[in-house]
Length: 170
Image (cartoon, rainbow, N blue to C red; front, side, top):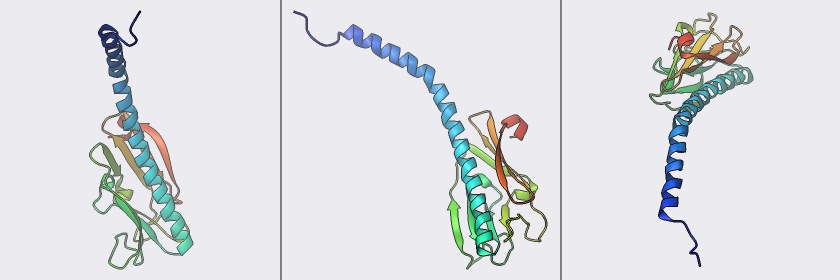
């Protein structure tokens, strides 16, 4: 009569095969998580810009998305910009904020959108001085060759384009 169960040799062979498969899959999984982190940050910023634009139209006043320190990857806030200066001052209503994305992502805007994106009641993006505001915010992963470009058009619409770290200048 044969006993039920596994022998030690069968168990060791199974564990060896599982370890090899896990070793092959781990690099692909880390690249996948880096790409998902990048996409998540890109869509978070895109959605927050769209929220600010729709709130500006709905409220009939300026709404601004400001990163506070010139570094988008440290987070940002969406607020009603009552005095239309691009900065959140005491008494201005905060609508939403995002916290930092850590050191694994670099998010930077070109000179026009390096600190803030501000929307007026028509839905157009404008600087605090009333000048046209358009530009690109680049999102780069430090663990992947992929990058995203969030483009703010002259009409205030934002879109997310896929690119590479090299093309984006990361």
